[in-house]
Length: 311
Image 1 (tube, helix red, strand yellow):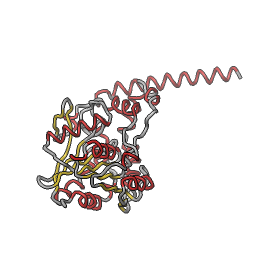
Image 2 (spheres, rainbow, N blue to C red):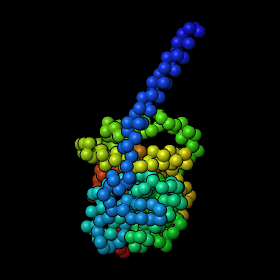
Image 3 (spheres, helix red, strand yellow):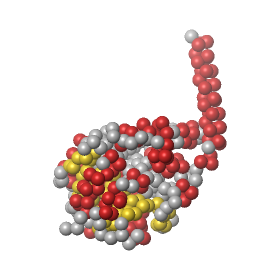
Image 4 (cartoon, rainbow, N blue to C red):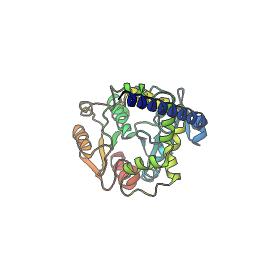
């Protein structure tokens, strides 16, 4: 037994050495993958304080609508909803909340940090009293803004997002993400068409289009922005901020909750609880999963327009 234990320990030690050497080699070979945001995205950008913020916009007149994406979502996810809302006479802006999309990786990645970035963005683009649409992680930001500055918000739409905090108290997990293993694993996972397509297919729903390399690169390319790996580690340590259900119940601005009927990332049950807390009816989007804005852009745009339309 002692001989077998020694052999097993030796084999594990050799395996660790091999994995470490492979991880180091991969890190060195791919170290040049990280690029500046401007090198990966043509813009537009706007400088907000010390942070270069990436965004998209559609329409030049009407009610302002600001679209806030979720985790690992670039503003590309709004590429169909944005023009539809613009055609319905809205000024539409989609903003990349760091550490996602193509906004520079400057923290802190906290609710206060995101709200400060949103306020600065609105000042720079002369946006007043927008309807805020928060998808997934962005739902928490929209809800927090409606609570802290209700007079500056025309309404909020929570889209496939319950606005609740997630992941707090698990900071120890970030301590396990050490060099050279974490950078290697991060680059492999975030750059693998096969892995990204599995996640995207589940989030998009059964009726997703062919997940070509060109489409997948819209989600993979933001992970190459310099500083993303370290930023995600910081976000994991602190958890994703949000608001409580009791705080949701205090929101009084016009509000709506929209949910993909096939969402398995944030369950429909969570959507019902969110709608109940806000005192509104849950609006389900048929045949859509978590990325309902991609699965059913017309239905999502119509639902947003019904709240954003001037009364």
